Length: 175
Image (tube, rainbow, N blue to C red; front, side, top):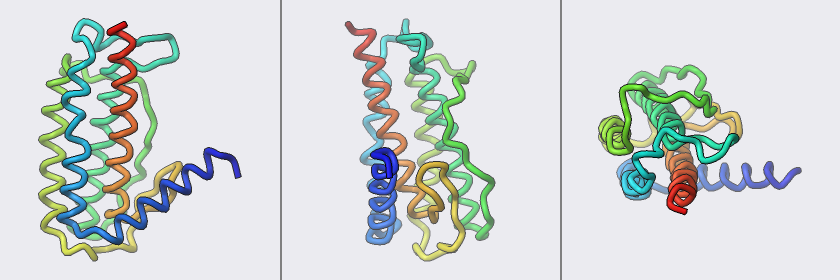
């Protein structure tokens, strides 16, 4: 097993253990609290460089934020679909495509779209009993099949990872 495989298994174990332990209300609160810094972190990227890649193999803040929005939307749709009807969601691809939202030009605009959609999801999660359709799985290319509760926590891990990426972009342009 490679160190990357071991790290993926460690994270998967965390997702499963925490998702089982926490109530839907606690899951929603954890996700809201832990991802709230995304707004401030995004704002640290200089506006003049928001669409610019720090290096040829790096992503711009706009590309990172677009990926966050894409994953937020696909995760929310999958979880809501499972909670509401037990429907197997379409595959979710956690892949940075390099696309950007041409209608959004600032971190604050991205944040507004992100938080509005996240609020709808978290309200739906808070209304859940917690045992709805746990047999229906959302498959992640690195962490495997996860139930909706586990996927919700994956969304937290995902956003935290990309917040670190945005911090690196901000630091590059501040230098």
